[in-house]
Length: 317
Image 1 (tube, rainbow, N blue to C red):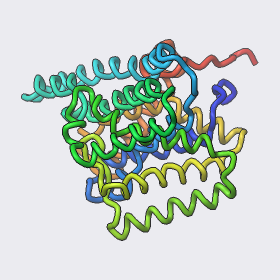
Image 2 (cartoon, one colour):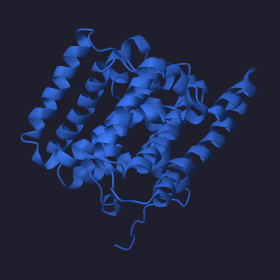
Image 3 (tube, rainbow, N blue to C red):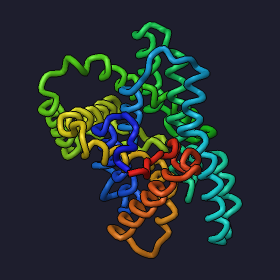
C-alpha cells in the first residue's frame, strides 16, 4: 500500500499528523491542561502549511475547484453524517444544535465543533488567491490589518456564518507560510533553527508572556506576540520535520497516515461523548476515525469522506 502513495512531502505530512493529534488532545483533555501548549499552534500550523505549499498563478476557478474537492465536499458529507449521529442521540436541544451547525463558525457546538476550521481554511485560501496579484507589500498590509481586526473584534469574526470572517484574520498565517516558501532554500541549519524557534516560543508560553489562541471563539491571544509565537512554532515544526524525514518508507508511512486526517478532524468529536476521559478518549477519538479513513481510502467513497482520491493498489504481484 505504501507504494501507492501520492508524490508529496512526508515531512509536511508528519507535521499534519502531530497537529491533528494535538487538536484531538485539546478536546479529549481539559482546556486547562492543553490550552497554553496546544491551542497556541495546533490549528494555525495548517494555515502556515497551506501558505508554504502555495502554488502561485492558479486561477480562482481552479482554486475553487480544488478546495471544493479537498475541503468543501467532505464538509457537507460529514455535516450530514454528524447530524444523523446527533439525531440518534436524542438530545432535547437537537434542533438548536443542528441550526448552530448549519450556521457554522464559532456558533457551532457538538458534534460540529471542528467544521469551522474546514470552512475558514477554504475561504482563507480563496482570499489569498483573490489578492495574489496585488504587490506583496499590499498583501501583507491586508494580512496585518486582518490580524489586528482579530485582536480588536475576534468574536464578531468568529460568529460570522461558516466562520467566513475568520478568513480575514487567518490570512496572515498563509502569508507567513508563503514567505517561508520563498526563503526556504536560503535557511542555513534548518534543524537547529527549528529547535530554537520552538524552544524560545515554549519559554515565552511558560513565562506567561504569550497567551494561547482559540481561533474558533475569536480569541487571538496576546497582540502580536501570540501571533509570532504560533507562527514560530509552526515554522519550527516544518523545518525540524524536513530535516528529519527523508524520502523512503518513513516518508511514505507519514503520507499514508496523513491522507485520512480530515476524517479524524471531522469525526473525532463523536467520541468525546464516551463515558471515559483523558487518555482512553484521546486514543479512541484518534484511532477509530483514522482507521475509518484508511479503509475509506481504498473505496470510491474516499473523495467524499477524506477529501483524497482513492488509492489504487496493484494487487498483481
